[in-house]
Image (cartoon, rainbow, N blue to C red; front, side, top):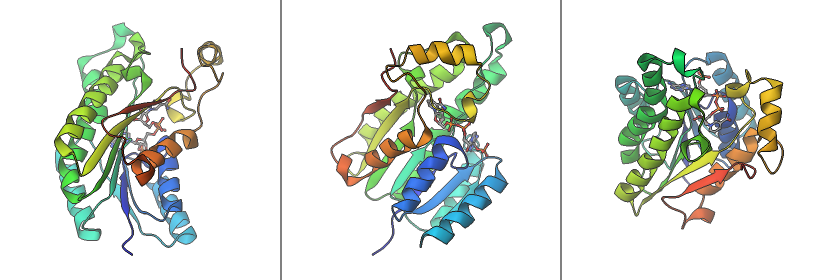
Length: 242
Ligand SMILES: NC(=O)c1ccc[n+]([C@@H]2O[C@H](COP(=O)([O-])OP(=O)(O)OC[C@H]3O[C@@H](n4cnc5c(N)ncnc54)[C@H](OP(=O)(O)O)[C@@H]3O)[C@@H](O)[C@H]2O)c1
């Protein structure tokens, strides 16, 4: 049987890395996209190819750069010639007080978190004959906005619109959904101070941030046949964030 293949952007760390592991564990060939973390990516590839009978392809590429994205898909086409699942996970946050926000930084966030997924889907979907695309949005894109992340929040709202629009366009062969995590324990939040974390935990019914695997499991479920009737949806995974 031909193995299924998944492309995971931002697969070198955090939520993306946990997605990489769960798809590898389920016998997928995995394409790991990342921007800088060469060492991490090499180590993951070696570890997973040793553990499982799968191929791991590393694709270092800035998802916001159209030429690099085109080249990445040429490489993917050569190696696999098809894709089953795309996970748009790569993302950045530049939290700052409003006075320090500039259009340059705002654009950087939008380019990575919104234009990136647009390019990945535009150039990637022709490789999927029947499959699924999952975009990692955020509750910040729905109803937990902060002025310090006004650019990030707009990008994640935009990603929900992009999800719905592509779901219309790619039906019925490709299901397109978004996952909207609340707070997750990753590098993205490593600068948060203890007092802030304590206050945020009070707003979460489960009283804690999520671990990456708790998001990755939902992503995997959405990609699978168990979710064959879930389409154009946004699934919150936020522990009951009020
Ligand atoms: N953490 C949270 O609380 C939280 C909550 C809701 C949603 N999310 C979303 O979940 C996704 C993953 O977040 P995370 O917390 O796991 O992030 P993270 O730990 O900071 O990891 C970010 C990943 O994205 C990659 N990346 C960043 N910019 C890129 C670019 N231009 N091109 C290609 N790859 C790029 C990084 O690659 P390198 O390692 O090479 O830098 C890394 O693999 C993001 O979209 C984020 O917005 C996170």
